[in-house]
Every structure is written in C-alpha cells, then in structure tokens.
Image 1: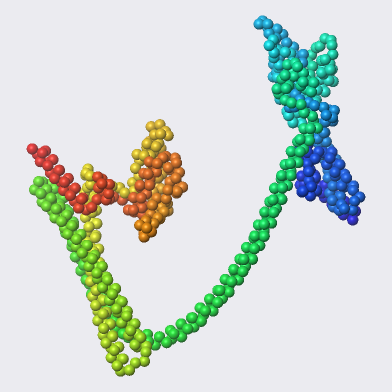
Image 2 (image 1 turned 30 degrees about the vertical axis):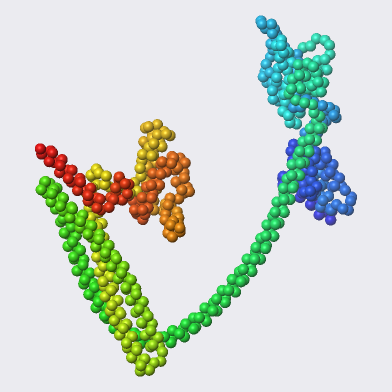
Length: 620
C-alpha cells in the first residue's frame, strides 16, 4: 500500500513539472488542481502551501490515500519548483502591515540642481534625462515628471512606476537604494547642507502634504495598502475562476442533454428501420404472388396472340407497300423543294441585277412588291394549313380511339367462347376495323403531307428573312440588324472614368468587357430562376438578382453596368441559350422590338427608291 502511494505521488509530481496540471493562475495567485471544481478557490502561495501540507500529512480517515499522495506531490512541487514565486506573492514583506502608499506607485526626487535664467525664472534638468539615469541603475521607471511652479523649476520631480507588482518591486528597490546611500527621505528632512539627489517612495504623509508634491500626488493617484491590493486582485481572480467553473458545469449539463437526445433519436431510428424492413418483406411477398398470377395469365393469352400473328403479318405487308409509296412521294417533294429553292435564288439574283439601272430598279421594285405579297399569301396559306392540320389531327385521334375500341371488342369476342352468330359479328367487326384502318392510313398520309408543306414554307420564310438580314446589314435605317447578346461597353466606360483617369479607364473597360463576354459565352453559367406568372398557369425564366457574380458586379461598378450585363444575358438566353454566342436579328429600332418580314421588305423598298432618286440627281 505504501509503495503504491509513493508511486502515485511520483507520477503526479512529474505531471505537475511537465505542466499537465494547472497550478499557477498568475504571478501572484495559485489554485489546487486536485480539489473538486466546486471547492476550488484562488489563493496566495503561502495559503496553497499550507493547504497542500495539511491535506498531505493528514491522519484523518476521510481522506483517501490518493488525495494525500496528490497533495504531498503538490507540496513538493511548490517547495522545489515554485519557491521563487513566494517572493513575488508576498510584497508586503518589504513594508509594514497596513502601510499606505500612493498608487499607482510613485517616487519623489528632491534637490535637483537648478539655476536662474536671465528672465528671473529657475531652470533645471529635464525629466527624460533623470529617467535615463534611473533606468541605467535598474529602477525601470515609466516616466519622470519635473514639478514647476510660478517661479519655474521647483527642484523636485515625481517618478512613475508600472502599477503592477514588478513596478512595486522597482519602487521599493528605488527607495532602499537611496536610503542605503543616506539620500533618503529622513536624510532630506535633517537640517544641514544637502548635496546630490534625494529620493524616496511616496507615502501617506507626502500625499497629504500641502506642498507642490502633495498637490500633484493627489491629482495623479490615491492611497492604497499592499494587502488591500492583493486581496482585491485575489478576489477578482477567484470570481473569474468561479465563473469559468460555472460555465464548465453548464457545458457539461448541455452535453448530457445532447447525449440523452441522441439516445432517443437512435431508438426511434432503429424502430423506423425495423418497420421499413418489415414493409419491404411484405412488399416482396406480394410482388412475388403478382408475378406468379401474371405468368399464368400470360400463358392464357399467348395462344390468342398466335392466332392474331397471321393477321398482323398480312397487315405488315400492306404497310410496307404503303411505306414504299410514301418514300417515293417524299423523294418527289424533295425534288420539287430544290426546284423552288433554285427559282428563289434566281429571283434574288435578278433582283440584285435590276438595281443597276432605273429600268432595272422599277422591275426590282415590282418583284419585291410581289415577293412581299407572296410572303403574305404564304403566311395565310401556312395559317390555313396549320388549322387544317389541327383538324386532321383531331380526326386522326378520334379515329384511333374508335379503332382501339373495335380492336378491344374483337379481342374480347375472340377470347370468349362463341357460336355461329358470334362468328358473323366478329367478321363484321373485323371488316369495320379494316375500313377504319384504311381511313386512318389516309388521314396519316394527308397529315404527313401537311407537315412537309408546313416545313417547306417555314424554311422558305426563314431563308427569305436571312437574305433580308444580309441585305439590310449595311443600310442605315430604322429597320436594321441587332446583334442579340452583344455587351454594351458604354456603361463600363462611364463606371471606369469614376474610378480611374481617362487613359486607365479605357484599358480597364476593355479588360472588364472581355472578361464578361467570356462569362456570357460560358454555357455552365446560368444565373436565372423560374417564376410562375398568369396566376401560376405557366413559368418563365428571369434574372436571379441574388446570384453572387452579378451581385458583386453591381456592388463594384454600379446599377448601369449590371443592367447592361442583365440585358445581354436575357437576349442570349432568348435567342441562343444552347450555343451562347451572338446572333443577328431583324430589329425595329423605333419601337425596340423584333421586326416582321413585311416591315423589312417595306424598309428595303424605301431604301431602294431613295438610292434611285440619288442616282437620278447625280446624273442631272
């Protein structure tokens, strides 16, 4: 038992030496690391030494062997490793109990050499020079204030020390050094001739004096005892430790509450997992039974499928023949479309050729008018085709539904046992089904022809629009070409002129525009959000104002630059969201909208007439 106690004491002493247990709170106060948290208190060196000795050497049976060993290790650590702290922890040993000093600590210097100047005032050494002398002697003053009255330098000064315990040590050394040299306060008060500097530590009689020294001391500090200061500081540190202990206890309670909550949640999760496993097992069993029933049913209907297979093969042969006819007609349509395209190209070529002379100009005007009328007529035809296509589609869907009903009726009749009358009914139903199939094929063929015509008309309109864009590209008119998704650099330049001079502004504008053009081309950057409009009937995409990159742009360069980037984003998202590159569009700049084909043709006629009149004026 004794050997075990010694081993424990040695281990705890090594832990204290390595700093694993906190003993020293500050340079003056200490705490016992082995006492319970609610009984720990901050105390001075001698109090902790007495506590460790009393517990370690106690003969009480209430103290365990481990408690005694730990406190003996603490006593050994205090004596061997923290003995130097006893001097700093008991500064009252340098003074009498209850003696009051001026605090913050002050020293007094007298008999500073002074001399009278020409204006009749006294002058002497500066405070900084005296401070340097005291520093060289190891007193470490913070400042030396020379005292002046109405007649000039008074020959006295106040020495200021740090308001900590090290400052008190320096002040006491300062006082004892001058006492040892017979240059202290008592030596100054003796009668007789004085030579050299006299200095001492400021005390209560100096503070209450009616001289210039007392007046300045009362302004700069007050009277305190060393014991009172130590008790006040120990009380503050004890309060701090108590607060920290209370916080640690609160954290521990919170941790236990979280552990309890975690345990309850784990239990609920376990129950939910077990219930899920049970549901999965039931579902698997039910699925297995359904699969078995489906297998039986599939064997039943397999025989019926074999009977219908011959009928389907015959229908497939008919469909193949019709597909060959359809492919032949598609080839004819493609040949006709190419002929129409060649005719349109020839017309365009003639239109450009007729612009060379006045007679050619009149012919070109007539052709363009005809082209506009043809485009208008084609639009009307296209609208009528769409209406007819929708009507045919409705008929096709109704016919398909009717065929499905007949097929279902036939399948039901075939599956059921039937007599001779039922056979007649089935033949009638099959005949009706065949007729409906032929009607469906005719409607489908007509539907395909309408789709091909619509596509050809739409291609012709798009080709005419592209040709008009190429023609109006270099003309200056209210109907012109707008590059959709192109970034406007003017707001960037105005913003840069505010931040930089004119030369740097252009360079910065070029760099910023180049950077944001790359951002606009990036298909992975999609700063849009979807919102519901028309009372939630449909959705549309709008700029996401909370997007980080756009928010930083508005914050750095302003609202106008943000608006220019947002406008380019909307345009490129409307006209080329997949490729993210700039496209040309026929644009009405007066009304700021997309121009119609008719507006473009009218504008072209106006420009041609204007050019013809200018040529006529030039010839005259």
